[in-house]
Amino acid sequence: MASEPSKPTDRGPAPPGRVAGVDFGTVRMGVALSDPERTLASPYENYTRRSPQADAEWFRRLAAEEDVRLFVVGLPLHLDGHESPKCAVARQFAAWLHEATGVPVELFDERFTSVEAEHLLLDAGLTSRRRKRRRDMLAAQIMLAAYLESVNRDR
Image (cartoon, rainbow, N blue to C red):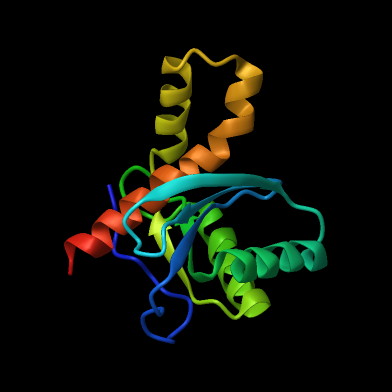
């Protein structure tokens, strides 16, 4: 399910510390965090976008308060692995996020994460309203867990 991570910056590997996974959306984004050892991913929060300035402040605060050393932004590839039109927007967001926070950013294949999150929430018997509130951050957790597994496997 995972593709080779692509980096919008050439700063090399991030120093040890937490990784924040971002299920990118133009209105709402799910965010998940790893532990400092980068072995576990946990849902953190859904963030509703406000303005570029407010968004930058929120992500800077997240990076500072949670000691985020790397952001991983979901790349919405087509099922066949080719880039979707939304990939360009996700790439622009990743570059903006790096510029706004100074934290390195990688892109990672997010195919099936929202579908998998929805299935898990349905299996848990949650109402439509409760599923909607949790879907994005659970998708971010699933994507971040896949990213962590792929980089830990390569060690």
